[in-house]
Length: 175
Image 1 (cartoon, rainbow, N blue to C red):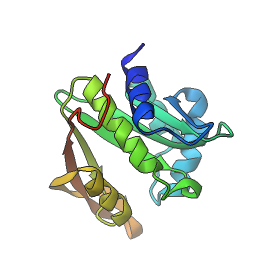
Image 2: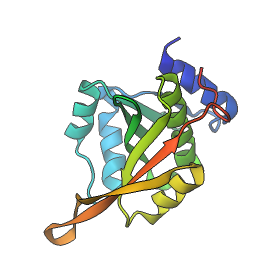
Image 3: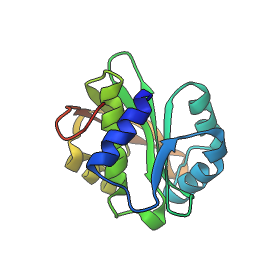
Image 4: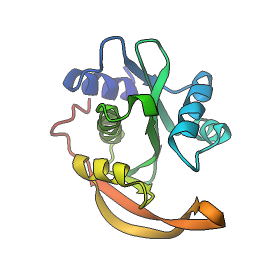
């Protein structure tokens, strides 16, 4: 069993998905569904090419599929020297506020641990208050700010809050 399969099995054992749902490694065949969710969920979305480049670069992509086998959410993780970086995570607007974002973050934590890292880092727009609230609830803390990091309306730029979570095996079955 691969590291990713171990992490998936452990998280599903502790926090089962709804009947018929599953999570699996993202492939090129998932990019249309992932890009569609990205377009619906964000004002300044990643392009399909951004996701394709991430997969080609060896980043860890996971899709969450609903009972009808449609992509309902995803995450992209990038292992860095001494920590995991959460590059992107989203749940389709129709499935938001049902615990699926929290489930994906739990999986990100498990993947961080099985890859031997002790922390998970991300950037988020200060205007994305819903995401920030979720990140705080699952254990992230603000550690800094990147000035003018994101594109914004009217050719302006928005800062990014940098958040980190120390990942511990308690509460997450890592292997």
